[in-house]
Image 1 (cartoon, rainbow, N blue to C red):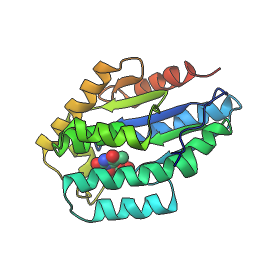
Image 2 (cartoon, rainbow, N blue to C red):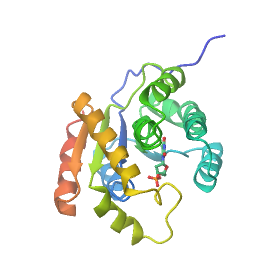
Image 3 (cartoon, rainbow, N blue to C red):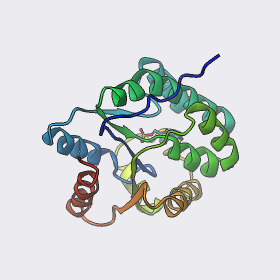
Length: 213
Ligand code: TMP
């Protein structure tokens, strides 16, 4: 049986992902990036993981609403991810649409691999079979120390079961993200969200502009 892979991209469409520990402030910047790309006259969609499809949103509710084994967490997010890639991300890129995605596989390395301590090898093997040779063109990593991030999460109302994890868990997640950024500095760009919101937004604009044709 042939496994359908990402369509080869013959256009300028890019896949940009947004990452960071809970409360790091990434989500508001997805919209800014979308506006910038749309203002350049390019088609662009915004999506998220887990989620992005009807099935994926059901998986998201399952994932956030139930406690489960750490390996099950990883398997569930990758099931939703494959559905998302096949139904939304790959077709959009093949049509020439830019895709902005709030979280992707780096999150599984950080949260399940490091936060839940299942290790990078398990996540790597799932990534290799789920989306071989496919990764974001750019990842914006919004970084903030967990104690500051948790104050922001607390200000948003009831925390979900991952947001409610310990500071030590979020420290492992953050460390993993930063290690991944250090290992792939061209793809993963770190934005320090202790800077003013305007300064961070300006960096988002500069980084996204660098990808525009
Ligand atoms: P969000 O609130 O940023 O949309 O993310 C939902 C939660 O899911 C967040 O706490 C991070 C977590 N998550 C994982 O644990 N593993 C993953 O692979 C993804 C994509 C998200």
